[in-house]
Amino acid sequence: MAQLSSYDWPGNVRELRNVIERAMLLTENDVLETTDLRLIGAPQDAPTVLQESGMVLPEGGIDLEALVRNLVAQALQRTHGNKTRAAALLRMTRDQIRYRVEKYHFEAGAVNGTPEAGGPAKA
Image (cartoon, rainbow, N blue to C red):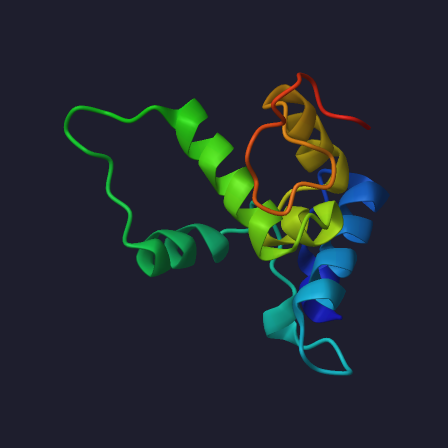
């Protein structure tokens, strides 16, 4: 409760709902623990994510759009097309993942995360 109360909540109730939903989807416990609550934008998140990922920007730069597309595809594959769970893996909202599914023309229920051959995704 202290962690929830001390957070600024720039996204208001919608952000609180997303944090709780993500924590419930990703926890393996019956009760949420402090470690289950990863507050986006909270100061403790940034160093942890960078340290855990081991990612370093290459000297020549990177195609960020291709990286995002690839991560969305991997999340959809890992969750067998479940957009809510894929969004939780990427610390996004379901609306954000749906936007990217449409943007990258992924099939709505894509398990393999590859683009649909015929055109835009179905909503």
